[in-house]
Image (cartoon, rainbow, N blue to C red):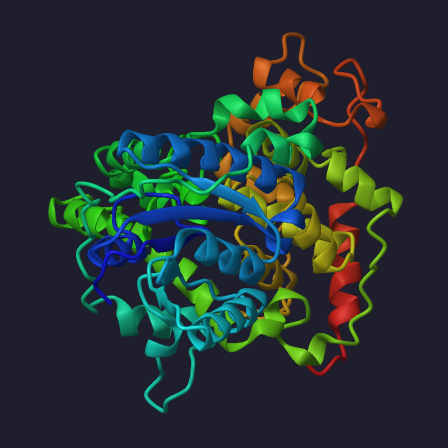
Length: 473
């Protein structure tokens, strides 16, 4: 297609201008480009923190488009209905978007593409959220990868296309369609007082994401192999929130990591492996979509997990008051910053599913409510990996000991002191911020006594192993 009809650019988790194949294709059509974001069911059902963070990103994307002389049109409703209405209002001849890979998005996008094409609209989907489309990565026998390491070996030397430059100009229509006001969507409503506490820790938008990438690949990536496991050290990229919303592309990250590797940064390969770990999560979600809500290993279906998300010990876990410092510090970090260190995520997930024998879905749902870097594929794979029912080449009976893990990775207690106020004569501002961020109904105060452990760690491990023993895993 190449005429003067407008092209609608349907934005989703691709809130950037550079390395945006759908945007580049829309600009090449020759007519005006109308960027639109649709508040549909997938947005309405987001948890408090990811919905709030999405709102921040939309505001920044709107400003970035205005800097190009364009604007972001915002509409609420079923995507097909909204897009049909916009086609009728603008005379658009095409709709372009970036692909998503969860089953609900795939079903929605197929429905939209089929209906629009039947109505004479050129509907096109593009890559951009991943480096490797899931159907292009196959084992030697033609199947999908169930274990990470072989997938890494299969893709590590693949060519990854160079990132696309942002269009110099974005053609605009003579008359813009009407748009909702972002503030009317009340994206921050469920965050309540936590939004003000969490806001300073967010680095929102494409420019901030690129700055963060440059800082990391020019510095901390050198020691990433070791420092990534130390929650008290600023040793990671923190790009998860930006990747989740497409404020930066994985191709941009990959090429920056490759440059650092070639320049001698010894931790660069480990970081590149983490980028492929993200790809692996999407690979599994695409090929085995039941990973999102059911045990990936079907043989775990009868395992006797507690599924009561309101049980007293689960509430204590949610509040960061288990009496286990590594677990509690991690949960409190999440409420204040919207993120959680990856080593800490493994500890809190193992503790909930092993020591408290609680179903991984309880943790998955809570993270989906509280993480500003929430990612549907990474969240599901991470929880199932920790629970033992997911894609893990190691034995199912791995049970992390939060005390020995703390001694190993936070020996000087920098991390726990940063986030736990109780018992400290002069608690840090970060530790006190937790009490300002959490719901008032929890009735928590920094003068409270630090709780005794919910369960003895040795006894909890023994109980978990006894539950596993004799089962056909």
